[in-house]
Length: 332
Image 1 (cartoon, rainbow, N blue to C red):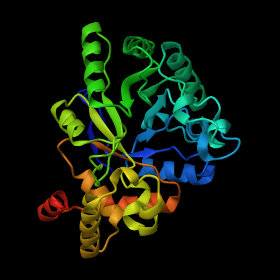
Image 2: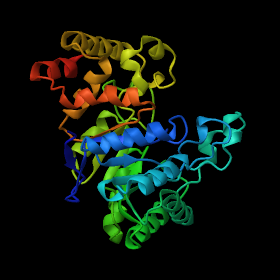
Image 3: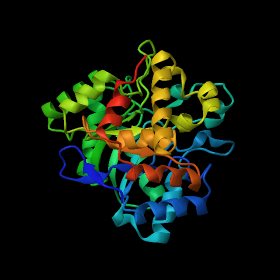
Image 4: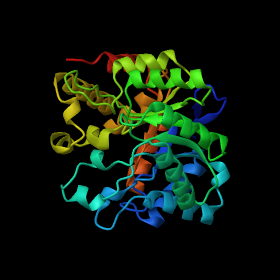
């Protein structure tokens, strides 16, 4: 069964293993998506994660909103909305996906942003697609440095007051911005974020590579010191690279991690996997699920039923203290 962890200081417990629905309705067809969703809830899970922009990049005709629409159909069919802690995101909607797919524009140049009206309209549209009257967690998906934080935070406070979301979160954000957000919320009495969604895995970002989306040591220390914020770690197995050497050589997820430290850590994972008779991906998921400083949510985003089922053994894979220490100490 999937155990739970606290969501900040809200008093709420959420599934430690969350299910990312990014590819549902596009790369993952409806029957497969429904099967994964049903099995995840039957296994004791409840934390579903989506966004209004998922998944415009999947191919021609995709515009975003497909994942939310699929979840809306699943809620209508299953009647299981009350069993779900539902998170979605706004601010990363792209107005011209075809221009980005064709290379005529950068996605970041097309993001809708976190203006007050933008977020209000975005959440209303998400609720319509999902077929619900509220979500449990609403994230600013990509940090918007061009909009005053006061405007964004006041709008988000209004969405909470209107009952359209119960909690707030932020994603792809630097530590100094988190502190600024917290200070403004305290000053104005606005609801502060309780979740921070960042990329986080066993590999460590190369110190010379700057990436706002990847948790670094500073941000981990910050989150460890502020238990009102829960980390939601996305891309925990980095697209499955721990079991695929060819993918490690070519996948776009790897450049921020390239270096001797990564090679040492990959070797450590391979050694543990061989000793335990499991996969490298399962070792990394188990390692993440056993972290407690800080304790956080691990968010998987399977494309296929096989990928989903391959992740589940990590729930019961307990790494002993010596193994955890060996993994923690692995370095070039």
